[in-house]
Amino acid sequence: MKTGKVLLLSRPNVGKSTFINNLIGQKVAITSPKPQTTRFAIEAVYTDDRGQIIFVDTPGIMGKTEDHLSENINKRTLQVLNEEVDLVIYMIDHTRRRDFEEARVLGLVRKINKPKILVINKVDLQEKSYLPQYKFLEDEFKDVFQISGLNKTHIKPLMDKVFELLPSTSANLPAGRQGASAGKEEIPKDLIYPILNFDSKIFVSELIREKVFLMMGQEIPYRTTVIVDEIAERKNGVTYVRARILATDDRYKKMLIGSGGRKIKEIGSYARKEIALAINKKVYLDLTVETDPHWQETYY
Image (cartoon, rainbow, N blue to C red; front, top):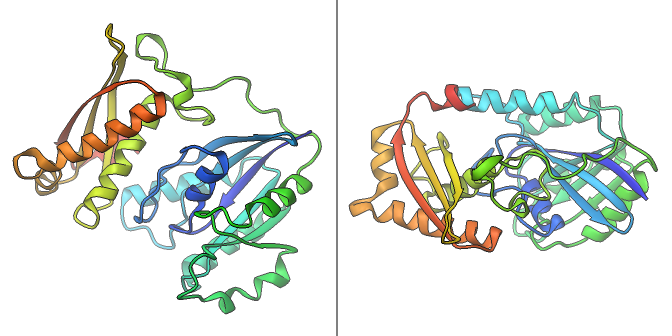
């Protein structure tokens, strides 16, 4: 039996979260085409008959930060690099050119004195490839795997190598499921398991934020967040969730609400269905939109 902590590093939108979700077998990280959809490190447990692994999914590291939010996300990711890990997976997207942002991530990976695996993601996409630009990395990394995190292609040989490289003994995994909301607002812990460092409110807020990003596309800027104020079990067995979408400007608030409230109803409907699926219970989602130009400083 082996246990260990594996750190995933990349620039934004390489597909780490999709890889983790499909590996774990349930959603632990939200995904969208927007850069740095993941805003803080997510620790999730993978278990099979060989042992247990804590995978640390970090936000993609941006080459340049243009606002408080991006700057803070980069700082949090860099802080994670100082934590004790047993193995590093450096993931690249061969469909994107190698640039300064990629070079910065590679520089950070080189400084970590732990076993490393190079993972080339999105091999299911072959129409456009810049793989020759990354060919030199094969001389630097002993173990190289080409996978599709989306289609789960070649995941098994990658995981075989991960377990091979992990030590037989390592830091103990946290006992139990940490971070569940306490008291009357607690909802089934299966909602957040196997995530180790999320509480229920954060997890639900992430599910809602994902729907905002996916349904609004390029209409709404990256500077949008979701705050869950209450989760409670009602006597009729329905889980009540009260949440707010925060926008930085009134014009974005109007776009999120939509004509006659159509857009916010659509977002709420899709988010409610996913929350209900996650906890296998009926959910009532009370979702509103507010303007708060300073939410980045307040909540991040």
